[in-house]
Amino acid sequence: MRGVTVAVVPPLLAPAARAMPWAPFLSAAGLGLVIVAVPAALSVALGPDDLAGLLRAVAVCGALGAAFALDDPAARTVETVPTPRPVRYAARLAALLPALAGWWAAVLAITVAGAADGIGAALPLGGLTLEAGALVAVALAVAALRIRAQPDSGGLTAGPAVLVLALAATALPRRVELFASPGAPEWQGAHQRWAAVLAVGLAALAWTARQPRR
Image (cartoon, rainbow, N blue to C red; front, side, top):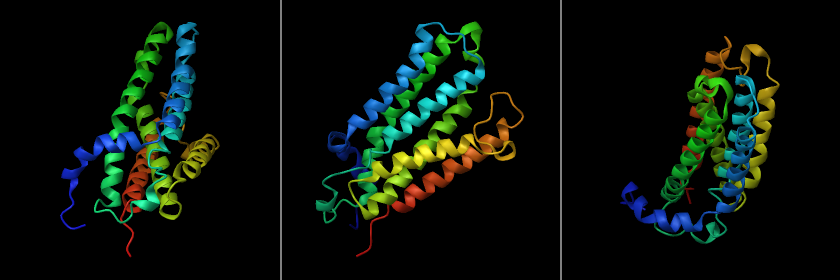
């Protein structure tokens, strides 16, 4: 594996994109778009808390879809190829992340455009995007950890883990809450904790993506 660098990632993009299980992501992304599009189309008057709640539900959908991105039914047969696991993961993430970013941008645009009385323009979209990114990072990290033991079932483990994290976040006491209301005094502290979740998720993903020693 000596000499294998990130320079081999671009040629792997097309094969990685073809090999990825896109159905879970597309299904989850479609559900997320419906969640924000229906209130926007019906001109339902929602407050900042309601819109933030919708975007958080959509973020969970995105993380559930992304959780399956590393699954590979052929993983047991490719452990001996010259391209190591970190490079294969990098190629898959390079195929996934633009699609994920474009989908999230569409979700935010629909939410802002459909909000009444200009409320959408006042939403803290950066903080909500941080929450979504942290959920995706956790999903990918848990999936990669599971794949080390069972190569083709990362998403089946990561999906429930994301749901447990989201449900647990709704039950936290105010002093350590994650889902703070927009404009609340707890918002900044909550997003410092989300930044920590994102950092831990990315670090765990990098660690679990290492090539197993033989």
